[in-house]
Image (cartoon, rainbow, N blue to C red):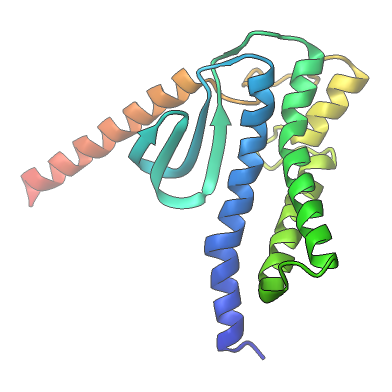
Amino acid sequence: MFGLRDLVSLITSAFIILPVVIFLRESGYFIISGIFGVKNPRLTIGSGPRIFKFGVFDVRKYYHVYSWFSYDSLKRKNNFSYICIYAGPILTNLIIAVTINALLANGMLQDYKTFWERFIFYAFYYVLFDAVPMITINGKPNNGMIIYEMLRYGKRTDYNNDPFIPATSDVEEQYQESMNKIKEIDEEKEEKG
């Protein structure tokens, strides 16, 4: 039976653990791409209107599960660079999950064991769905498929011209257009109301 304790666990998982795991996943792109000379990196957390932008972090108003990494260009463009960048999120979540699991196995973090076990679960969840090659619902390949294609064919084989990781300048341009549309709609409402 679903009780109050289960509700608290669900809220903790949805609003604390899952967003942190997603943030760490997206940070994997950022960390690895920095090694290969990424230009204009940005880690966007959430969606909708911007709350603040600080350095590479762009924090938005609405639910923070929707996050992504963007950059404008790479200094070292080669297959190895791209494979490493797309492996970054997989490796980041894998390393964190294995480390926390090892700490739990060695008697550490026992005070919050249930919390950390859920954290490990979500980290491995993202590792699984990032690493197993597949085409996602929007018709684009996941990281595992990108890595597989780069290793097997040496190139992208899905014939999709959209970039796997969007350019930061394009993301900013789309954001400004969206905010202008919202502003126009708000102004129209004020004139009518």
